[in-house]
Every structure is written in C-alpha cells, then in structure tokens.
Image (cartoon, rainbow, N blue to C red):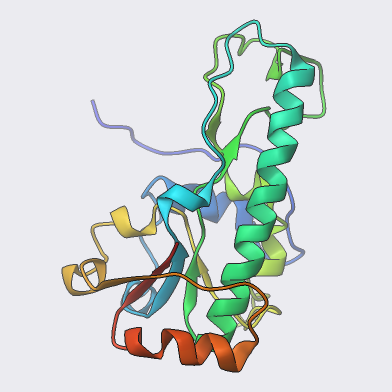
Length: 209
C-alpha cells in the first residue's frame, strides 16, 4: 500500500526561521510538492558527473573507520572546491547552481559509531548520497523566511537546487534537454568567465567539465 504520511526525523545545520534540512531531504526524494513553477524554469550551472565526486570507493561492512574517514574527508575537500567554483560561476552568470552529487563515506551522528556506521545500521551501504544538511550549512544557502511566509534572498546571492533536480518530473523537457557542456581554465575572474561561456548563454543548463 502507498504510505499515508512521511515523518522527517532530526537533521543538522538549521536556521532560526525554518527547517531547511527537512525541506531539502523532501526535495531530494521528490516529496516536496509546493515549489512554484519558477523553481523549475530557470537557467542553471552544474558540474559534470565525472567531476562532481572523486572516484567512488565501496566501503565493506568491516571497513576500518580510519580508512573510511580519510576518504570521507578527501571527498569533502573535493566537494568544497567544486561547489565554491560553481557558486562563483553562477554568480558571474546570474544562474542558479544545481549542486553536485555528494557522497558520504561515513555517517554523521553524535553517538557511538562502528565501521563508520551508527549502531544498528551495521549493513548500511557506504558510500551513500549525503543529505545536504549532513555536509553543508543549509541556512547559508537559503534566505530567511519573512512573517508573510515568503523566503528572502540568500546571503550568497546564488540560488541552489538539489543534486537530483533534473530527475524531477516538474522540470520541463525544454529545460532538461537544453544542455551545453563547457570547460574553464583556472583563475578566471567574473568577466573572463562570462566571456568564455557567452556562446552558451541560450542553454538552460551549462555543465562544467
């Protein structure tokens, strides 16, 4: 039978005005149904799947936590660099950022852990796709909610979308299929980024290799 309701448990990195982490988890699973049409009809920039993460490593049930944590932190450093670059490109171009896939090689919990898994979850697959609130400070990526229920501008000046955004059936085919792939050199300023990507201005999605 179909579920009657969905209950969101604890999450991390919350703001004072809204449970951003719970909303993002629902978005990531296609269960947040109240975003306006404009959310799905913008222009976006994202990273190619090949460069979004480090090469995937499977962590067995008996993995040494030290090995899992080491690769977890390597992945975190890579993710930080990718997201920082995407935010800069998004700001230069006035585009929203589709976050890259985010992999966790160790669970995130304040209680006992074994083989980088919470007690009772010894067979959990590692890595897993991290919820946004496990690895990013979610309030920094979204605006505070006003008393009238509207969401203000993000402090970053760049909107973000969940990593699996393009799998949402509400994304129009005209957006999903309008993809331009591009590569950029290092150390470019805003003007150089805009100039380099100008040939792709009409594309709904610019995918950076």
